[in-house]
Image 1 (cartoon, helix red, strand yellow):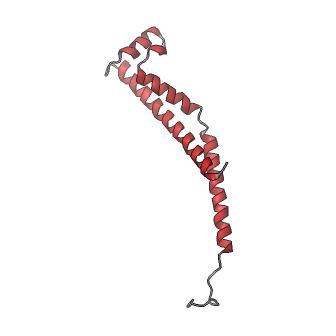
Image 2 (tube, rainbow, N blue to C red; image 1 turned 30 degrees about the vertical axis):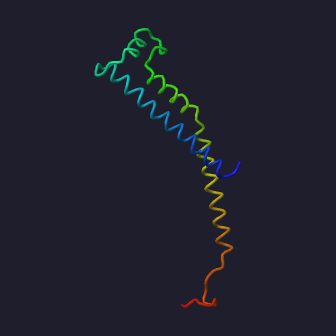
Image 3 (tube, helix red, strand yellow; image 1 turned 180 degrees about the vertical axis):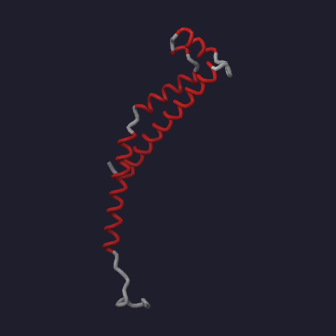
Length: 112
């Protein structure tokens, strides 16, 4: 797998995790508002009354899917991939610097 592909995969996994975390926040805020009496959501109230999440509102179901996808994200692997990419690029930079001629007073056009 080339570096660009690994980078894209890492970014996708981290985005999946971030989306899952945001969904968890939205789910808890929604339920707090509904069950605290500050907002109404008939599907979620029905789901609560019947102890069946299948009747939750569409937004809540979407957040649940995003949250579960975030839980299964391979973010740790993505971070490791990014670390390897950075190490590889650091190595490449070090090689380029080592191969680059240094400027010293023996080279023409250099004034000290």
